[in-house]
Image 1 (cartoon, one colour):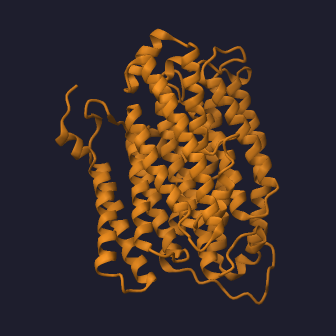
Image 2: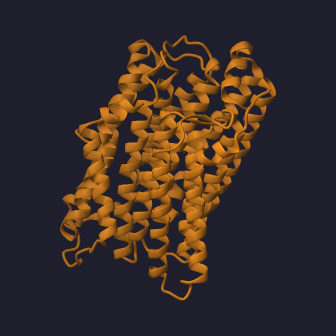
Image 3: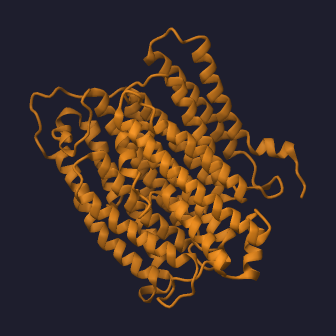
Length: 493
């Protein structure tokens, strides 16, 4: 295998930009701006972070293509678009951070956010088990810290602890599964693994490895029944941390998941075209997708806390994303990764926007925006926040012509192509369509409070800072634009 380190450095310039940005933010804050106010230090760190992400976006857009460093990294259309997507979501999260309540040590917060983004970009391009595991753990360890960053909040500490315990367990499962795959195939490269499994086929050790890997990714994606950390993490974490967990981590995670399952473990995928399909990981993924959609949507009905409702909504969306992984398939056997990427990216934009609204509300009210009823009268106090929230919630609900509708449509249509109504995938699509009606109900409860309920007439108007307002408007505009022209993204994949 030819190893060209110069080529590797050129390929990793986006990651180098992010790491350099984190170090510069830390160094300047420590050496120059330590005596300034927290707000001023946060503003400086955010500008450095935004500059680092912007430089990384340019490097990705004009950077390497194809395989790099002997196939360790692959920069195909999925990798490039996912890297651009997670960088864009990180940039939006930085904008949300500017409108959130200022935390202690703001430069450290921005630096850790950049480290998490570095992990996401590596996940998108990983083409071997070792790099995939290291990228996942870099992102995960950063997210654990971000979840517990608010030291004044017991809920934040609880969120970080639960997230860390479940994440550590999933890392053990993942490493155990990867070690079994390496022992069975003698390789950590995904193409070689696929070649060896094509010869060996499905055997008991392969089944154990598949179960381990699926359980690990179930934890990472907050898919049922491995979702128990999600409601507490979404509720207790600082708002920008919850936004990053819900958006960029899902986009990068499912892109890596699809690559690993289809490019590495594709020969033992089995079938969901019929109810008597061949055994493999596809039927197991279908069961997890069904459980996630059922539990997420039904669990959201009982929630009065806005952040916990978004958490259960995320569990339900994880089920649909798993359906997108199922229908992706290798070229010629599935719809490709277009529907999966489109759905994950547009879901991430809507989620960042929703948490951005919560961030502004929590900064305006020291008691915070916890319950759904706290949104009462929002249309009167801030028409901008109410209008943007309506766009985000309606997109999550899948209402046309917003991007969320076309994301669901593309995934469901691809599922129905696999065996039609006689197959597992087709019935999963029908169940998901039915559960979308359930989701619409609890989403409309949120909109009823924000747009219809009178609220406290004496409550003062909410002033939205300029940068968070721009972020919310950009998110809303993207959801409308991508909903009106979904083929622009699909053609790229």
